[in-house]
Image (cartoon, rainbow, N blue to C red; front, side, top):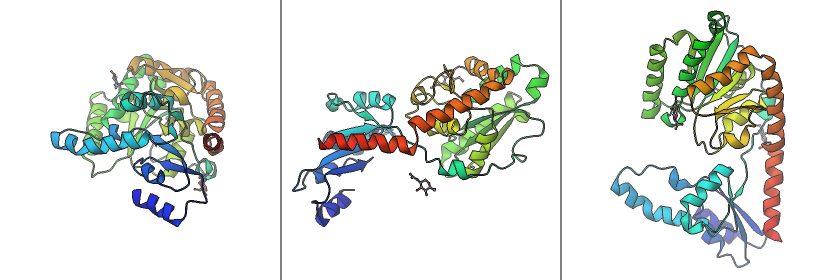
Length: 323
Ligand SMILES: *[C@@H]1O[C@H](CO)[C@@H](O)[C@H](O)[C@H]1NC(C)=O
Ligand SMILES: *[C@@H]1O[C@H](CO)[C@@H](O)[C@H](O)[C@H]1NC(C)=O
């Protein structure tokens, strides 16, 4: 990034007034060297120093200067953007020396082209016959995503449904999976075992590493999406689901608080299996809910999380730097 910044300056810095810098702040001081002063907009997304583990003393030692550089150079930007109000609060807690700065929010957006052009496939090979209520969880196979909450909610749901209704319920746990990542491998096994213990084998399909086309087909066919992580920085899955007119049941913390409107485009619940199952059950007894919430969800994505919304907001932030 520093090399690229030098390269850009070397090519001539007469032609631009604002630098938009994404994710890595280390290059910001280089732009400050420009002969003609530049304004710098830094899209931080989320503090990088919170995304790496520091298990050992050596790792902490190694990260200390890097963390310092991140904080110091982030503070040199003229405008700082993060991906949600939730992250803005984390930003202030993390970068203590920047507590006088209030980062602005620029929500990530959805490129809807692939969603609009895809022709949904049949899901015969994923969903057993006779299932009417298809619930979908999409998340990487990581423990912090709290996927067990979806399985536990399903158990609670079974307790409240008639056997006839229960027979028509199916959950698909779809998730990014990389066999080189130990946690993915272990957690997949843990979840499979848990499903067996709960006697859910017939009601759950685990899907690893699905294609975009499969994802769109699943979103197209499902009754609602179950989104289990707490304190998610932003969370693109609920936005994708809402665009596909699919209501979302999510935890009432983190990004989903800003993307989902409670009782309008989905339900926000405590991370509690009973609350989740109650929300899910509503879609079984009230089929029209999916349709009305689905429509509201798509409208919300178009208004707040479309490429156009992103472009417009970014444009406002850039022009504000020029006055
Ligand atoms: C959206 O995706 C399509 C196809 O993948 C691409 O052609 C288009 O440029 C993208 N639009 C934006 C705004 O990124
Ligand atoms: C994960 O879900 C369980 C219930 O299944 C809940 O008790 C726990 O608090 C959740 N974890 C987080 C971090 O929200």
